[in-house]
Length: 159
Image (cartoon, rainbow, N blue to C red; front, side):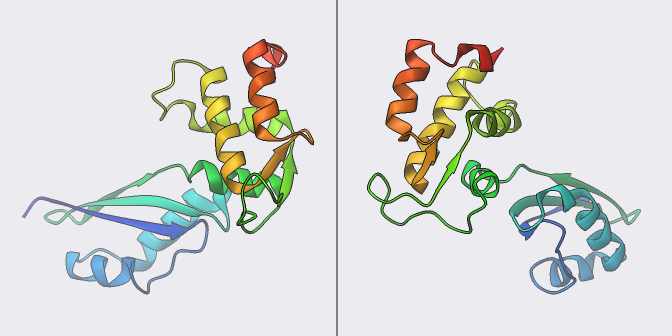
């Protein structure tokens, strides 16, 4: 039968043998708990966040491979800001505040999967996500921070 791929969005460090993974893995003949434990081990750094996971199973040999994706920029920002959800009224209500260092950290995490050409470009994208979530950066609105990034005020952070 060859390779079979199962893609799912799991909670970091909290995957279980229940749906969606258990029922999908069962017919493939792999040890479900072994796979679940491996997923939880690989996603423990993203605890509480939704993480894209792909399990590739060779149905002939019963060997499996697990590919872990990166959580969304919004999930990473909310973790940095210590909030559960955005403001619901972006641009007018503010749910939290993050530092520029946190923006750079998230940008570095997303950089390799981004189409942007530089860390600075990814950081501007992350600041845009902050706007959508209603999260300020360094106590300023994301629009103010974007203007400052364009002026070069934060360039030393993007080295």
